[in-house]
Image (cartoon, rainbow, N blue to C red; front, top):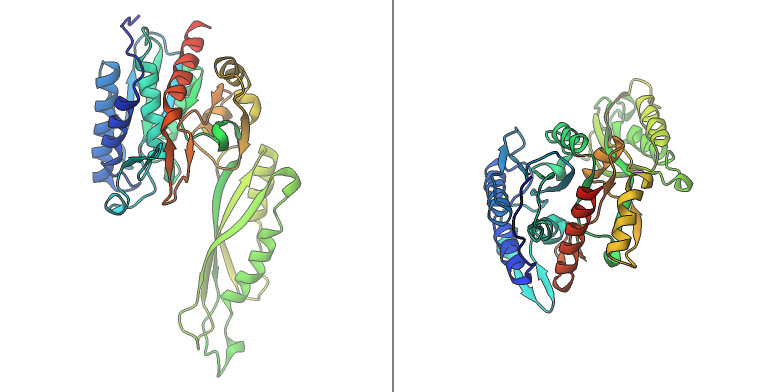
Length: 366
């Protein structure tokens, strides 16, 4: 058992640590930037919690793993990659003013990560506590999913420090989410001289867009939303190729299976057109039952806190699908995820740090 003297939560110290992380830009898929970001996260963990943080090297960038020793009991889960390209910091620097802190990645999710580290650092006993901070959450967690699932099963409880829901609520349920690409192959011809000699991939795409959109079922929480489309080369050429990308969100495993089966059986309307479908609902739904136990503890620690089911996915979807108790949205209170107005409410930072600390203690004692 690792015994230590906890350090009181300090807003100034949290803001300084947050500044360091934000000013090391960390766009997903930029391996050089992610390496620097991972090293900064490892330093944060070691400086505030002691011990040694390991960098888990992958083709998607380094993940960071830290353990307080002893029998694994609780996994604090986050990510250090962001959606913002290099150079965003120059246009939108880290800034503290009027009760908010702003900058690329402050809300999603560097603020929550810093809060969690400082909350745990306030505890005397860190035994059984693990941190896993991944490098590819924003692009699907393909390289980290196996490690996430392994540590979640080993620990038996997961606290996800993604940004809070609106109003500071915790995220007690999440939709499963994924994307599909519908690629259509037709045949080019001259649009003026012999349009009938071609197979118009754009017209075929229009049929497919209507079909896939009809797969949505609002009553069951299923959304199917075409988001990106491309077709054609010149204005006088019948398009030989078209591509449609579709975002899908579901609340149940049954809907996941139904929608995936429907995409797999899409058939062309135009003679000689060919369709190829790629993709899946990669993040399974996070049922609210998976968060019930930990949410009840959170309500005791922070009376009045609300729980909300949300449409966005996180790595908590993976751990909840394994049956591991998982509570999400424990990170920063603020808003503007993935947007230029992203911000964190500074006054909420100590309370959220203490909430994570209280949940860790509760899991250690059970």
